[in-house]
Length: 348
Image (cartoon, rainbow, N blue to C red; front, side, top):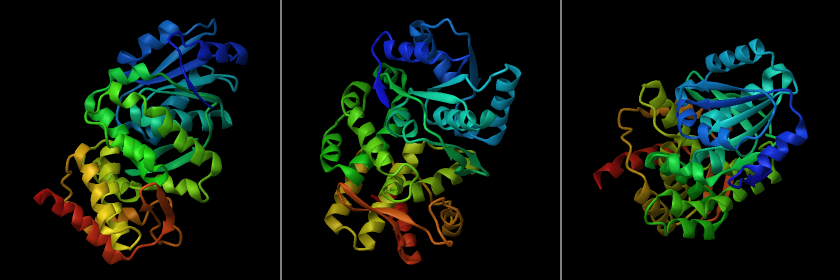
């Protein structure tokens, strides 16, 4: 359930009061500790004791070592199965916190309070938890649904512009795969700031929630949410391996450009649609230089994608603005052409 919090966080306080948890743990990173936690604690009304768990920010922290540290801390602090973990942060926090909660003592309750646009529109919704393994994105994880998701728009005002832009990529994706009107509204935005984006967030959240409700465990239509992520995750992993991490939304934007051109090469969309979609993505996202990444390294990562079956790469590709197919297998030649198409965009 997604709830928009009022200024006093009354819905959250009522939830905690009714549930009677034994103890509360609040997971943050250094950024949310500084910019979001003071406001959160000022509005938290409970007599239940709570502890703050803090990790360093960044995708690099989303690994088994960090998870193990959090399990150990929960154990040392005598967290029992009636404890509550509150994930206050962006995608790394909600992914990591959900994974830790769903596995500690075979599962304790958790709620997500996303503080970034990316987490509000994507990571906090849908019950996917996970950590990275050997630089492969979200390779280890669980399906575990939060008890509640609380959305507080004011947290967006704490974000740097690049973080807003990162989340905006997922919003664009929601329009491209499922809602043409949403896409058309988003591409009218001239300046990406919290005020300009805020009113479109609930619709984006609802698009994802409706897809998840129709297919919780990603057997069919939920796979469409992976549009842009097959190639995007591969590039994100290579950048992480190089010690030059990029934001998830930057990788998704790159992936959507490649996979839109791939959809055109596979005759799923016409050239005009492909050019239109790519043009608007480029309006918001700068070119990323991937010239140093050989096709063979990218294909190695594509072949390890979680959606694959029998070592065949399964793509989710748009069939128009507002529609998407899934489990689509492309020729190696066309995948290579799509990557080269992106590389050559730097020339324009």
